[in-house]
Length: 153
Image 1 (cartoon, rainbow, N blue to C red):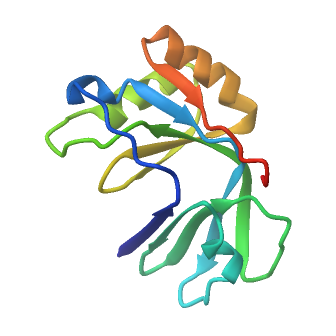
Image 2 (image 1 turned 30 degrees about the vertical axis):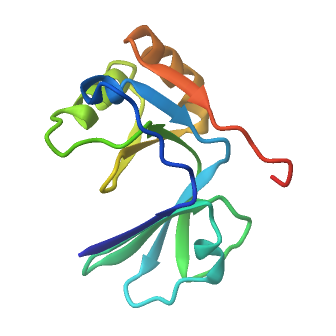
Image 3 (image 1 turned 120 degrees about the vertical axis):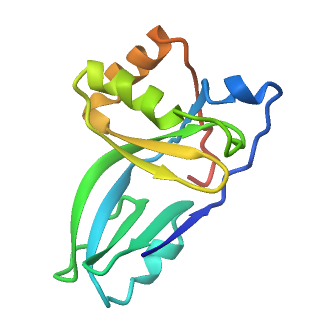
């Protein structure tokens, strides 16, 4: 299995690494989770997404990328996901970040999809649940800021 993640977003660093994961950033756009048949050639629009993650297993290729209106027999798609990014760079010695975050969503019966990278973690939440999720996170001591869209977006 291999995974590729690309993010054009700026990396932020915070003092006090142990509390770093309490600062979250809500990315501005909607994303989709795509499933391609193993061996598929991925379309070019995947690679133009500001954030994308590609994971290949023996059974499938999963892609998280900006939501599009493209349809094809080559993939299935689950739409309307928002991404919450754990701000800053996390040290590998930190334990339980995903567990802590997912427990907040579990208490509210909100389904999530997670992606971890070398630097940080990302939580995907359905658009219909994002307000309840943000409220639950705030009630549990997390701070959430929103990504600012550029004029061209």
